[in-house]
Image 1: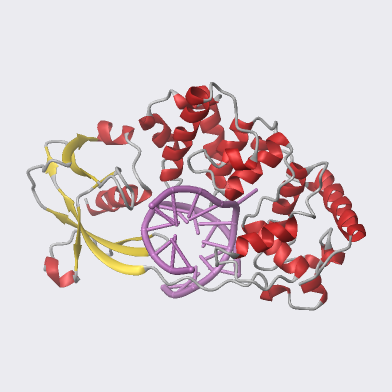
Image 2: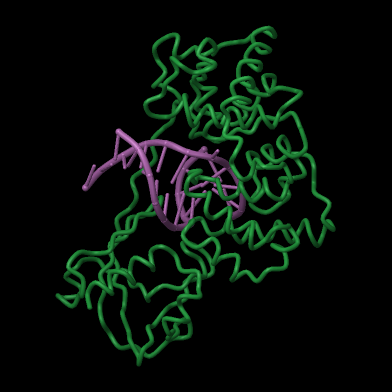
Amino acid sequence: MELWSENTIEEFRRQLLTWYDENGRANLPWRLNHEPYRVLVSEIMLQQTQVDTVLPYYERFMIAFPTVQDLAHAPETQVLKLWEGLGYYSRARNLQKAAKFVADDLYGNWPESSDDLQELAGVGPYTAAAIASISFNEVVPAVDGNAFRVFSRLLKIDDDIAQAKTRKIFYDAILPIVDPQRPGDFNQAIMDLGSSYMTAKNPDSEHSPVQAFNAAYRDGVELLYPVKTKKPKPVKQLFVATVSRKDNQLLFEKRPETGLLADFWTFPLTQINSIEDIKGEQLNIKPVVHVFTHRRWEIWLVKHQITPLENQKYLTQNEWQQLSLPTLQHKLLKALEECD
DNA sequence: AATACGTGGAT
DNA sequence: TATCCAAGTAT
């Protein structure tokens, strides 16, 4: 691992921030101003989600809920409807929980330190550092995937970023480098660098504004960084989705309040061991395939008239279109349309 | 420390 | 197609 002198650190900050001022994505909607509410919403949406995916969601969300009080006092159904299709739905529920905490318990007075911000639901070390630095100028590194990638290459840090304990190693390495005058811009510049020149695949470090500081590039080993152990493949699982019609209604089932797609409505889903279990009853020629982070579902549609159980309900199209449905369910509805 | 938790894009 | 990635957090 490389060690930088104070002079090197100061020159790095200058190069990075000069580039950021001229080439950073200043037009991103969450960079128009640094109100903590706007930063919070953007950071939660951006967790494990690409910028281009977030943009339309963010715009709609801020129109619907311009202030933390608006979000705090909105019906959860409306919040989830605006989150429909974004995934990781606990983020939406936690975001509203955090808004209630700030608006109601703290009377709108935001926690200003990284440590205190972590008291908000859904706000971990990264998000807290991002808000603290961007909104309140706290000198603290926001250690996200970009920071792991950028600094693992600049400093040749060999620790496995899949390991939880590695976060502290990066935090400690980056902390003395963060610009004490502009910590928020420093963190955002690292993110912009990580999504432009210092990408995971096909990086262009030769033209990077901080090429001279890149030890891995210098040594021709850039693509070895960051060191990251592989995750297991998603487990394959087979399901039957029951299509039960009554008049002009379809039967939906509310999923359990914990676990995958918690509390969301889908067709009743039953796991099967093999396609043989439904002996040619399936409506679709090809299964609906839906891949989660850790599971790969293949789903067959089967028509079957059912009397609703307690967690099941017949809904008209008008009714289910007003619900927030997971993308999985939208795929099933589309597949059903194509069968008719 | 491992694992659960969504979805869409890129190669 | 398979695989990995994309501004992580909660348990």
